[in-house]
Image (cartoon, rainbow, N blue to C red; front, side, top):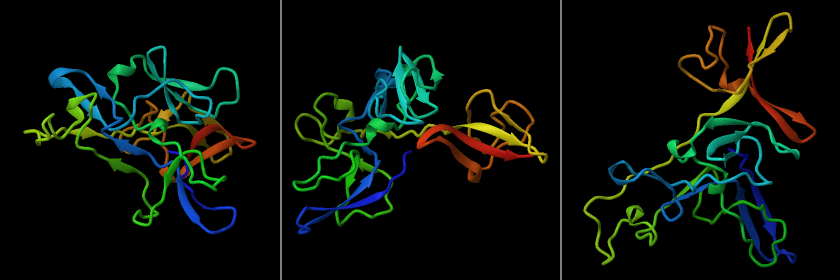
Length: 226
């Protein structure tokens, strides 16, 4: 997930102040996507994963030619660096993705609001990282609703899922003599087992770093000292 900084913005005459929190996803049964049909249908509160947008950054999920893909670096023009997570996007859960973060329409007089995130009302805690918004009726898919067309509660309420994809990083092993070796592809961060497929040591969560080219992320790396 992208950094979620809080930004205070003022109107030009300083008569009003607004607080925004960047990159906060809003999960909703009005915009959620589904997988499967009939008894096997699964309801997700995340929006459908779409094709890549020019503003998407490292770790963004996207659909390409029917496959589920992920950026492994910021886009710098040309063919972006990415990995294929599954050749069939419809066989995978609808993971939380960058499209879940709403665009911000700032109040009149505010010109420096962030492009995506939420307005922090007084009743919202500053340490929130996501919002879940549920509405009684969804007009285009009744299976996301809590009431029928007559306004009566359904006998069985829907069950929704919110899925977060396990983070992938490049694993970098650093020897006592300073030598380094890098995994051949990004690997999932794991607590049990070893995603590298070998007996080599695995990463520590605290050792995840970004490698930058200027201000552009070129790799997200897990350093492993051996």
